[in-house]
Image (cartoon, rainbow, N blue to C red; front, side):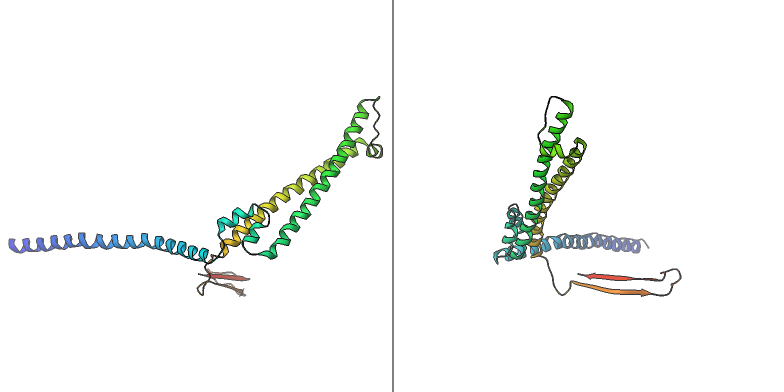
Length: 211
């Protein structure tokens, strides 16, 4: 009886030993594959970028750098049709900014002159705008042009940043992977009846993206 028990014990030990050797090695191999897969995908992506860069495709980093000069990023990406849009935006915003600044300075001088005349009876204000408008009106008009001037400069700064982002995103889209596996499907959804415990009646649009 004892030899049989010993033999069974030896078989169990041999089985457990084999399991300890084989199973962990399989797990390690699987983990290694899962770790190496993203690395390979990243390496393949970098290789594709290098190949496209050699083929004359724009670099997102260089596009961003050139974007600091208005319109240069679009020229680097060879999107010349965007240049009139970029410069037209700067032209319009620049016109409003500097025209409002001119009016602001003009009415500001008139407001200062009118205020000085109100506080000093011996002071004579010969500003035409001060003679035409009251001090309160001049203050309101001055604030109006000041707000418009500041808003115009803010929008001009936002337009400057936007054209840099456009150059960067445009260059990145050259490297966007578009193949047969990437599909976008838009279809109407009409559910005229209530489905108990599932969906109520509804109408809408279903958008399905496969990649």
